Image (cartoon, rainbow, N blue to C red; front, side, top):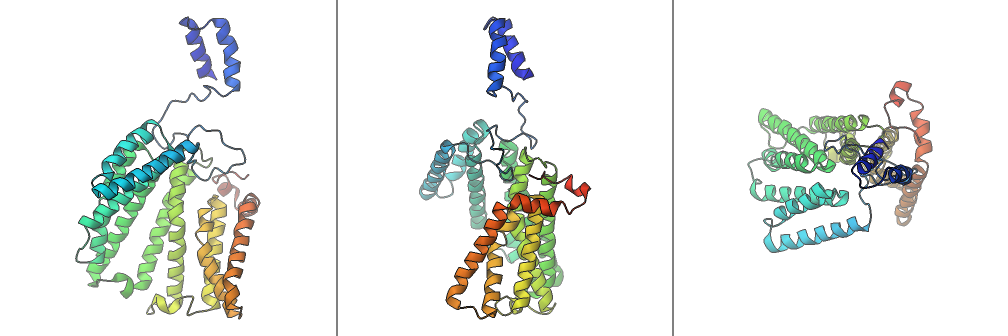
Length: 370
């Protein structure tokens, strides 16, 4: 309001409008939310999201990608153009097109959905080029390191230029990937084995689970820094959780199954198909824990990540109870669908019931209950 008033007074002082017109325009424009968001434009993670009007009942978990069909139409054009360029020029044409489109659509117009698509296109291009030119080393880990090496500098430069939250999330994931590959590479050098995972499965799954926990900690760092979810920090956290959730889930399942199989056993001897209730109930327990984590931090990625595993576990339990094989799949779909609907519709109520069990100091750092 103060910025709008200052602008109108300045216009009246320069003779563009009269003082009486400025006085009458002020409440008229303020009532229509014109010029009331006068905060200086910032290019860091503290910059608010796009100034579109949000539904008060709408969840603030995910970034707002679309402001209208205009964004969808432009995104379709980007995809078609890049596919056509790839077909005509190979991997030489798409990169200049990505940069030009990013300058126009991301840096100037700040379109969210095209920014996401262009970031994914850059990651795809980098992966393709890295696999073409840096793959084929003497070992799996060294090849993995060479493929991952181009990602951090390119994504860092892209984020510095365009400030796309997804690019920062991708940058962090590329650094985690490099670190994980380096750890396995050093272990292979120390042990003299070319396949660390097969020869040291328990240790490998522990390392993978620790890496997933580290990624989750970084995601929570961004999340807790913006509990109201009004800035780009929340958008970065959204993308980090989207990948961290399945990484945590499956690394935990692999680790628990390996512990059940024994240190000298292999993962194949502890699969759900060869097991029974124990393995199925293990999956159910891990998925439930993940869902509770998702409720506490208000991130649905931790619910959706476990749906496939939950369906498999339910199917095993049904088959162990001699359920008709031709009906198992439909029963599983019905149960999983019902769970999704109950959690989706009752999310605010379930979250209140879970979060209120936590200490007040913890509740104060979490997103507000609705």
